[in-house]
Image (cartoon, rainbow, N blue to C red):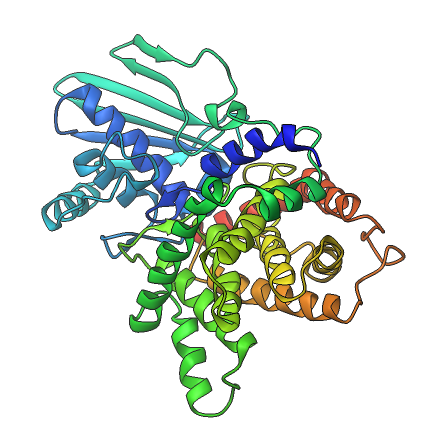
Amino acid sequence: MNTHLWPDLLKAVRHEVTPALGCTEPISLALACAIARRELGAVPERIVAKVSPNLMKNGMGVTVPGTGTVGLPIAAAVGALGGDPDGRLEVLKGLDAGTVAAGKAMLAAQQVGVGIADVPNILYAEARLEAGGHWVRVCIADAHTHVVRIEKDGETLFEAESCRGDDEVAYSLTGVTARDVYDFATTAPFDDIAFILEAARLNDALSVEGMGGDYGLHIGATLKRQMHKGLLSDDLPTQILIRSTSASDARMGGATLPAMSNSGSGNQGIAATMPVVVVAEHLGVGDETLARALMLSHLMAIYVHDKLPRLSALCAVTTASMGAAAGIAWLLRGGYDAVGMAICSMVGDIAGIICDGASNSCAMKVSTSGSAAYKAVLMALDDSRVTGNEGIVADDVDASIDNLCALACGSMVQTDRQIIEIMVKKNNC
């Protein structure tokens, strides 16, 4: 057992599993604006923002929490007017009605512009705030909260020492295998991992909110109504669908509750949390067992995502759900073999689902991925899996994951460009 890896595994989870209010791409721009406002020291008269194509893709179709309004411009405005510059992914936690009204007034007066930045960074947000003849520019790159540059009136106030964000260097998963993830989650001292239970609390609260409100496409609430009509069975797989999807409905529909995110994404955090929570409740397990299952799920999701670009054409809810499959397999059967079989079947099932931007329809992908995770676990319980003779799946779980991630890092780069071209053309029509 490679216990020397455990400190970095713990750092990875503490770093990547954090509360986030709203879709993290608009929130990244809101954070840049909030920091710029603090340095400017005045209410901005104009905001000029630029973002990378991938951040634009993920910011065009989501409702910014507390505003009832979709898109990056409102995120920039309310971030500048009332965002907490020290709030990181919860920068908009303290918004009030006056701030929202003022932000909408800026949009109506055409004082906010958002365009595409010509930068190599996949994740990039830049905000320039102007007031009284002065200006401040704040740049965030490579990770949602990593500030790389602050300028005021042409003077550099801050510049990151490295082009790599702190999110990149806080830990290393070099040399880590899926088996190492399993060993840590199932045998590390409970006191060291108990903090992961907060993911269950936050994301379950978001799920309850989604079932009770008219958020997004209200898919979870719709499924619940159809269950009561007898069109769906009230069973474990249906509960996984309803409760996971409801959390995503609320998050993408602008609820003012935080999600516990994973790898910079609230939906990934939901996908890694809620299916495990539902199964754990069904089994009636205690806190330690739930914590180990959640740790296995979240850390496996991080392990897979570490091999991917921060943003890509591959829907990372699917890879986060591979973590959920691992956690559920351990709960229902135990043993590393079942975990590996479930993940390999997931790779053989939902590989290649595209990310066409953050939007209300992300809840559909959450439900699809959660369903696939449970199906893969049921196969594992019967000692069945997609074999290494089929498609991109290999005999070894780590090789299967590598093959999937090679698609995202290779041929799906062009897929990403095509998706962005389609979205931009559609919105310019």
